[in-house]
Length: 159
Picture 1 (tube, rainbow, N blue to C red):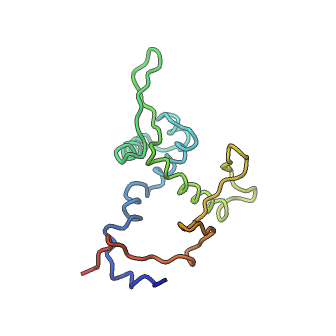
Picture 2: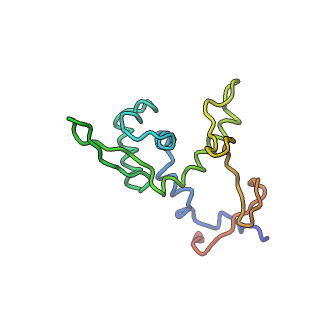
Picture 3: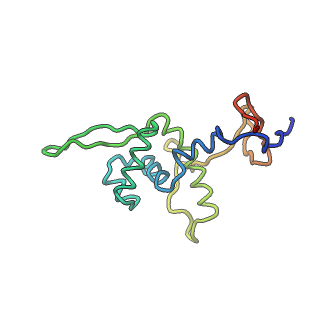
């Protein structure tokens, strides 16, 4: 396989990592997503779970809804005003492996002497879930040293 040409020859203005970070690359956003995957739906529950200022939480939820990662579903408790629950969309659900990979890294490198505070388990068999990099030919356990970036038609040369 041919190595990637000099990466500095290509613009980063349409980099998928950079574009994703515009939506997700902020601490509170990732914590909102963590809680959404844990089943949290309501503003007050997000606020209690992540201890974020109301204005920051509102901003992050609004941004995730605007980008189609979460959707707002109306509900009304008896005698109260209409409120909203926040639910993961298909687009949001696809972020699960990213959060698992972050958790896995934190479990390995940052957990205290008693280990990680939460484990994600497969409901069907009870085994612990982990993220693993695989290629389309189903080779698994890949690392950065096993891969090479190649430009596509969308890559733009720097002028």
